[in-house]
Image 1 (cartoon, protein in one colour):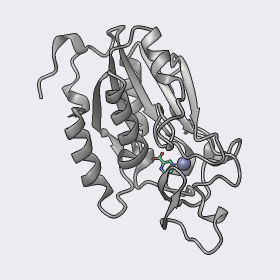
Image 2 (cartoon, rainbow, N blue to C red; image 1 turned 45 degrees about the vertical axis):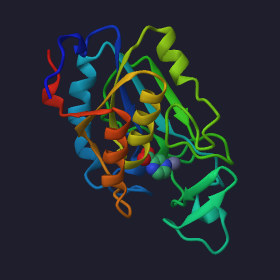
Image 3 (tube, helix red, strand yellow; image 1 turned 30 degrees about the vertical axis):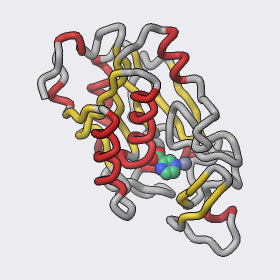
Image 4 (tube, rainbow, N blue to C red; image 1 turned 180 degrees about the horizontal axis):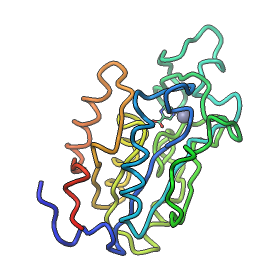
Length: 216
Ligand code: VGL
Ligand code: ZN
């Protein structure tokens, strides 16, 4: 697509939202996303172009409800029903303070203003950087961005079909113009989740671009 001139990355109304670039989502990590580490240089280059950058960290307490190990007889990638709805179960990952929860050390965006930790409530997952999986509990990110005059949100990182997609959908639902920069994301792709994510994003009006669609 052609990018309107108002969408300069450096525009004070634009923000780059970098999702979950943590060791547990990198090859060798607890919930590895293939080639996740290969995004680091591209995301660093993108980050350098945006005046506003927000970085998220998946940040679960030990024994989190999204961990298969918290449910007797369940395995990672099973689906269960929780009071707030369906929940995919995951290997233990991004436990608060663990190495796997740390941001990749080569992620180098010193001017990022906010590091937002999500999934901190032991009984509620949060793929989204905006609203937890109960679809009610707010992280505060929409208010933060709005109070700072942000209208345009560009989303990158891991994993495209979970935390990136949910964050982009909620950014759109909160009224932001929202783009997913496809080549700056990698997917888990569980049972068709990647195709589903692109469909949901398109239906919601989130626009798919590539990093070279952004103007200078
Ligand atoms: C994520 C599954 C569980 C993600 C986080 O960052 O996409 N996926 N927790
Ligand atoms: Zn998680």
